[in-house]
Length: 359
Ligand code: UD1
Image 1 (cartoon, rainbow, N blue to C red):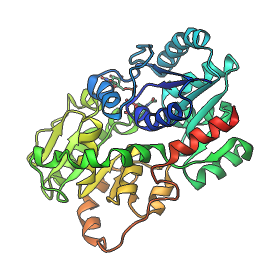
Image 2 (image 1 turned 180 degrees about the vertical axis):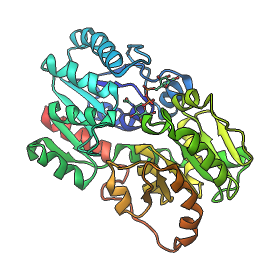
Image 3 (image 1 turned 30 degrees about the horizontal axis):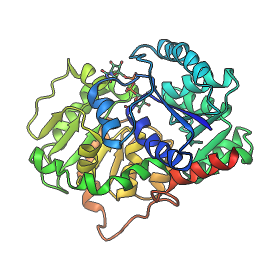
Image 4 (image 1 turned 60 degrees about the vertical axis):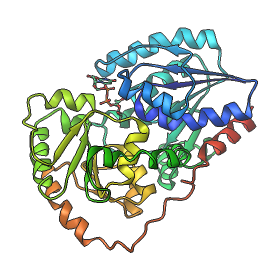
């Protein structure tokens, strides 16, 4: 069997690494070709992840880089088509909801190559979010849909997608976390940064709705205020870094650092007293680890994390950051949350079983 995996961004690597591993194990004589679109290209956004996650060097680098959504998607499609024609895969595997995912699905489906979509069925019901469009297209045109939460079934049924295409397998991002837990716990990133485990807030923000417009200066001012209550560590995504150039961001207690590798970041996440984010994956990782997470967005495509009790949706409202210390003080530390069903480190094995049976 010939399988081609298309990845392009930081979270893609985390979601796909265990699936590549499980399929290589079950199909050792198969062709497992990896395509890196190059949507993320800085060492700290890309290479360091492939190295730490043990992903083999990509067979094809498309080097599409940054650009408008149309330009990025078009460039990826144009460069991926000849690779698909050369590799002639029986199946294309894509994760998540980024522009690389969208481009890969469209290119494969036009060549009548079946697609498997990891992390299918998530919906924010907000079409102004670029990822929502990508999710809908990926699910509509993928033959195999791999789901990690119950609401995904309802979302897909509501779009007329047949149950036969859906496979509830669990969360491959959590597979990676479980597999690397000993290694990231040994990293001690907090100590290296001079902050005390359990006593600091970890912040990540990169979504256009928050960082590309007028909300960013107000958010930074709120982070500065939060930093008077507890140290705030903020590894800054390149998109956010660019937008922050004109924002006053020097404040005592607010530690702005470069993006971190997977192990360094998960270490900092696991030891955080609280997390403030607009990321999808971090809502899930905090749920698994039982860390209080505050999501600075109007909605989430991952309501399972809110039901689990770890995630609080703050709205797209920087002013809500001021309520975090009181919310933390009101928590009952004896209340332990349970990870959702099948978030157990075995999802990639289930995916591999489905793919192998389908042959
Ligand atoms: C993308 C995904 C988002 C995902 C995020 C994870 C889409 C629509 N968005 O957002 O869903 O949560 O990745 O990080 O696909 N840049 C660099 N170096 C890099 C990559 C990006 O400097 O290695 C800068 C460029 O200026 C670029 C900007 O960051 O224009 C944004 O990158 P892009 O890939 O367009 O979107 P993200 O914000 O990373």
